[in-house]
Image (cartoon, rainbow, N blue to C red; front, side, top):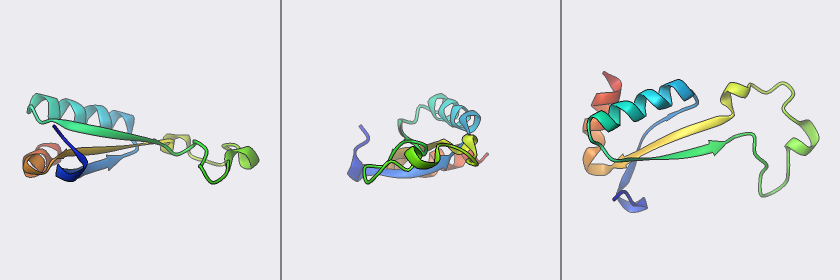
Length: 84
C-alpha cells in the first residue's frame, strides 16, 4: 500500500498520452502507483479566478496535471522503466 510517508514522486506530466504510457509501463512491470490529477482550470479556494477571465488565452492542453507516485522501494526500478 502506498501511503503519504512511504511514497516518492516519480514523474509529473500534462500529456494525457504520456500518462497512459506511464500507467501501461508500470502495470506491465507490476509496480503499484497512485496518480494525483490536478485540474489547473478549477477555481481556487481563495477566490474564483475563472469568474473574471474564463479560459481566454490559456493553453487548454495544460488543463490537467498528472503526478505519479510510487513506493520508495520501487522508485529506482520505476524510474528506469519509464526513462527507457
